[in-house]
Image (cartoon, rainbow, N blue to C red):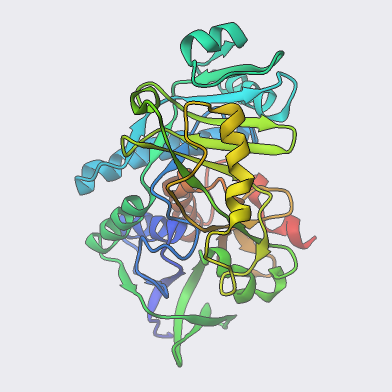
Length: 377
């Protein structure tokens, strides 16, 4: 019988990797996590002070059971670690009624019987006057939505994982992964680590770690910014839900003034294609110019000069859906990647999915949409 360094090696301990470590360790697995950084770092995709969680998921109704499971698991993590991670605010989807945002949110709400309210221009002006709508636009409000604190959440998942017995090695770069007769070999820091099973949660480093995906996954530079509010009370979490708004040139999103002063805004997609190791982490004038006109036109209660910004990374699949499951021909490796800029909220549920796949060989969660085989067909 071969001797392994761990039953499962998890490569990457960011948003998804920490969740996978937590859920595997909670179920008694012998699991080792490896990352080049400490959990909660600012070099990848899991930083920026806040992340949105919403349930009437316009991207596809299949995501709804996963986000509902994540709500439960985020609350479980709060109780287990004594950490405040999730604030309920509700969410607004704003745009033309026939557009993909509003139409998709309503389809998800209908399929899963989610509570929601459709607000015309007049009703929205009365209830949420911070958002002046153009003629013909509407809003969809859903109460099952809010704000997550990503850095604190990642650290809490990593802490819960190690408390349950997981091992975590940081300041370690993984150079390669290869199959073996008994499982997998992970090359890291001049060592060969062996395991029955590997889970790759390397985020923006995935394309260089798995060459077969290099031409399929795109790493995109994103720069959300924080804009000061003239009357901060109008943008407090109790009065200003998280929102996504459909424009003629894409989507913008926003998070209330969690710090009591500034509102976080960003564009969803449209960033420069880059790599994890070569991304420009300085904020440029062009970054500000991409958001300031949106603030002037759509949120007149905010100062269009941002007080801070953060550079983060999207890892995009060709169709915008996640990539979760075994790579074709490699049953002892599960890939969790390409969350395409909307994955953080799902981390604990994806961790549970991966624990199912590794320990049971199957899961009851609806993940057919995420099959890696679709990219390599």
